[in-house]
Length: 161
Image (cartoon, rainbow, N blue to C red; front, side, top):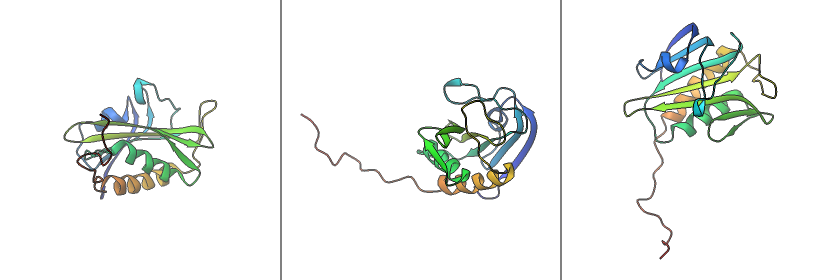
């Protein structure tokens, strides 16, 4: 993403909802979400001002979920690991999650990362919110601008008969 338009909000229901109607290149960041969610409609909760809560509007990409996960893990530092498909782990504990919603025209990548508070058993990423946001904008832009891999038109392996 080059020169994204960052919209900063106080309290919102969900950054995903706030970002859904914005153009590609937009980023929504909130101090607090009242109805944040992860995959499978699980809730994502954090007290105000304790997490990076952001949604990025990007062009659709066939490997967007993987690209977003790698970008988030890289942004969180060398100690971070990605647990497929959407969890960022610090010392084996979930510190963040990614939610991707895609249409034919655009995609919204939601990211929630614990910074100063975590539920029992969860992890924290020890970075200032804006430093992490800047890293995530840069890494997500790099990964989503990469061309999709070339896949063979048919399997190089013999088929079972």
